[in-house]
Length: 552
Image (cartoon, helix red, strand yellow):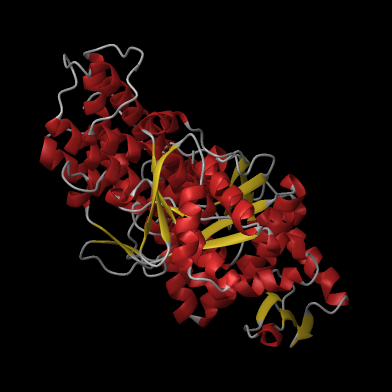
């Protein structure tokens, strides 16, 4: 419907002023129409004429069966009202397939083996899922992927502490660690290894040596030495822990890229581009001179010949390109690596500009519990992903005296997603599970309530094309859904969906308080509206990967 109105305005501009223009439609307050356009102000600048006079000419010339009336307002805005019949037809609009034929890679979560999953991993998993859903609903072929460091200094720190804890390279001692304890046990070893690395010179040298040994495992394909058995067993513990977490969230990844796979690729590429002058030698290391681009210089291969995180990220981007030849690659991380990623991408831009042009780096701030402190996996005071899920479960049981995983999970997801990505997020468990206000359970209950109404009557053919005032308000709000999705897709911002769904539920509540549905003479048309409302709630929550229950 929006496109039809835009075309009608464009035709009027062409006919009256012989100017091709792409009009922009906005949604004004309901009292000012269903759509509004400032096209007359745009034309006023081009023609050097009074926009108000242009608007009056245009208002009388915009012709479309969908338009009931137009009205000029202010210095040259045109407000547009749709006919009731057209508004009802707009309920059947489909989401624009703006990305049809495109291949998109969504990379998110990115946990490191040997370390605990923290709140940031939970956040990126939730937001990444929603963004991948948005890309899919716009027609893209989406590949969900994950990336993590199974090699590197953090692994070496953990391996040093594990060996100390086992009393040497004794893999059989690992059997004493129960499956329930494994994730926390590994996390504690990392903290211990990091502490001694910072404070003990002998331990630091040992950890540096272990770092090389871990890399050598992949070069030698060693699976049988005691050192190798410890490494491979503990790495698998981490992967099992990750998989259990993703299953709990309902998240599925197509591919996991370990750094052990991307490191050789990145190392090869950086060495190739070193010969071509993209990177340069510096004190025995290989660096990218970011100062030339108002960035900072970073090391891509250290003085020991090992690839750094930067080279591994080069390898990751090259691997994703080789696997998918993407039109769009979305990477979601914390905002602490914004400058780091700028350097990595700028270096790749020198030899593969298309990859960088197609890459979108989205970031988020710190995740804290209400009244919480900053987390640090190095110091052990981590706000774990499971801590947030447990907090929601505890808050929900306090309110309802029972556990409901769908509600608790929906509460956490919505609490994250309703806030615009970028800033820090304070998570309040009690607020997140409330049935009052802007929360996931509130919208889940709204859907269940609509399903309850529908269960009491069968929807027939909605023959009426006239709408009473409250019916029209609800219809108008429902009809905005596809436009909101378009905006969320364009900006890759799921919070637009959350804001809209909450406003929609409020509009429905206002309608339902004043208007009988079942056994009313207007039951047929009202059941159609309730059905459309329930469908939009379900579809919107689905985009957020939140369950829409039929009963609560």
